[in-house]
Length: 77
Image 1 (cartoon, rainbow, N blue to C red):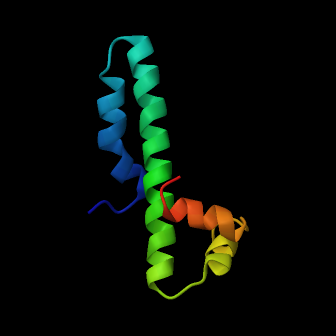
Image 2 (image 1 turned 90 degrees about the horizontal axis):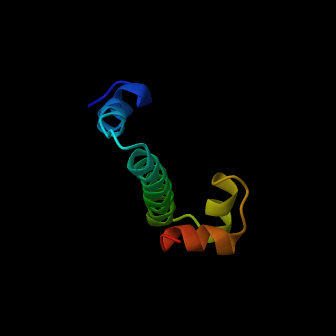
């Protein structure tokens, strides 16, 4: 397990830097950032929900977003 976020990201960075076609590299960077954001926000919302938090509480934890937005995160939206 990586000790830091930087260390954990290094394999992804290496993968992206090895893409030689600039347009493809750009597309992969965007796809990776969107996938990580979506997946990890969903996982956080679901973990908090499993811990018994209400959607309003989850929204407050996740940057003071509405309970509706927190619910959307839980659905992966």
